Amino acid sequence: MASPSIQWYPGHIARAEKQLRHQLDRVDLVLEVCDARILPASRHPSLERWVGNKPRVLVVNRRDMVPPTARSSWHRWLQRQGEDPIWCDGRGGGGSKALLQATVDAGAALNVRRQQRGLRPRPVRALVLGFPNVGKSALINRLVGRRAVASERRAGVTRSLQWVRMGGQVDLLDAPGILPPRLQDQQAALLLAICDDIGQAAYDHESVAQALLLLLANLAPPHVGRPLNGLLASRYGVTVDPQAPHRWLQAAAAEHTSCCTARMAQRLLDDFRKGCLGAIALQMPRPSPQG
Image 1 (tube, rainbow, N blue to C red):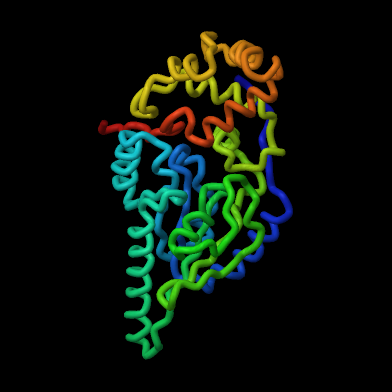
Image 2 (image 1 turned 30 degrees about the horizontal axis):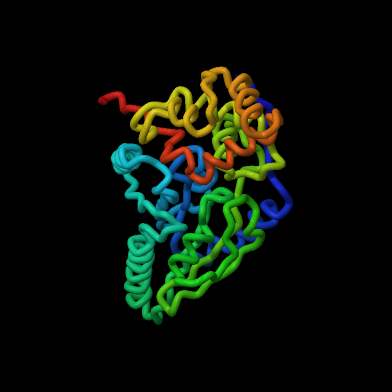
């Protein structure tokens, strides 16, 4: 199904990217945060160029929103690519101890090198970087143990860079979500819109909801923890095949939103984003040629 071009690059992101380039020389470690539901789509294409040889930790947030089978598949796939991800749940706190330990360990290695050069130890400076609304600020609050930065489940809440001190071992730099100036991969942009990892002014909600319905209709384990056709029918009382998304939205709107398909589209997207449809991975690793 064709969808309109999705583009979103507000002024605060452009300013933050400029500030970020000035701060990169000051940081020792980059914590790259992505969304477990759309793991490849939520990784910034310019990150490797920006970070260079700096140590980097891949943090896969919202682990609670994908099935364990999807998480295992991704973990194995990433390890084959030479990455050792840390799986977190920023809201519930899962994985935060492992993430903190990885950050502290990086600081210990940093200070060994500093002592060898005759310099005094100092806290490791870690940049927390990722697309908008992948849960960076919630993770920081978990690591710090208090509400140190504003955190909401919508894109664009963090609008400037902010240092957060953590008792002498770690200094965290919270950065706004950074998007490329132009989203070349429109399939990835659509997934970002579905997961609310991009500003809602950038897209038409009905088109995105219809795209979500088509994705849900064609998902099977290990993407999902249970069959979705039956779940959609039981939750919304609609038996129309979601592979006909326009008809499904019309039928669901007649049942729930006084025939307003725009409101029904928003309700469906909200339910998915809150996890009301269960644990769902919208992207899975492709099998390697060797199997």
